[in-house]
Image (cartoon, rainbow, N blue to C red; front, side):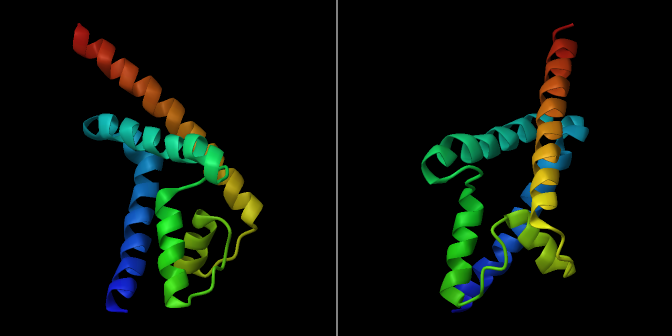
Amino acid sequence: MKLLLFLNYFFLVFHGIFTCFNLTGWAFKKTRKLHLAAIALTAFSWYVVGLWFGPGYCFCTDWHWRVRGALGFPNRSDSYIHFLILEITGIDFPQQLVDDATLYGFIAAVVLTIVLNIKDFIMSRK
C-alpha cells in the first residue's frame, strides 16, 4: 500500500514535470536536444503506440491510472492533463478545451524544438 501511494505521488510529480518540460524545454539551448528526444518519445507514444492502444496513448498515464485503480481512487477524467489541472487546482475546465490546448501546445513545442535544433546544428557547423 505504501508503495502504491508513493507511486501515485511519483507519477503526479514526474508526469507533471515531464509535461512542463515538453512545453518549455525548447526555450533553453542547453536542454534542446533532450527536449527533442522527449517530444519524440511523446509523439511515438501518442501516435505509434496509440495505433494499438488508442490515440493519445501515454505510458505514464496508463501506469498512473493502474496505480490509482489499485488504490481504489476514482478516475476523474479521461484526459491526463485535465486530471492534473483538476487534481492540482480543483478547477474543472471543459475536457475538450484542455485536450485542444494540450494538442496546440504540443504542436507548438514540436515546431519550436525542430526549428531551434536545426538552427543550433547549422550554427555549430559554421
